[in-house]
Figure 1 (cartoon, rainbow, N blue to C red):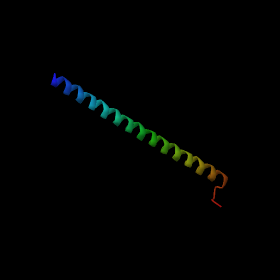
Figure 2: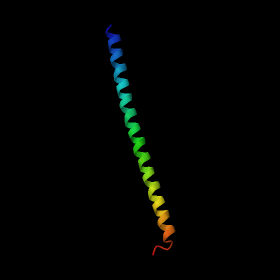
Figure 3: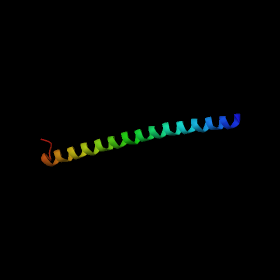
Figure 4: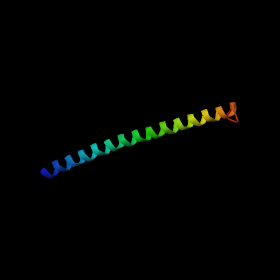
Length: 57
């Protein structure tokens, strides 16, 4: 009985730890996607500026 209780406790702790890691991974993926979107936006702005003024005058 004690072994079963300890086993359940260990399983619950592992599940909680895994869910916390998963949440952190999702947040990191979201931050990476936002950064990449920001870089793409800056690249588009730079390209448009270059089209308007090719020599940077």
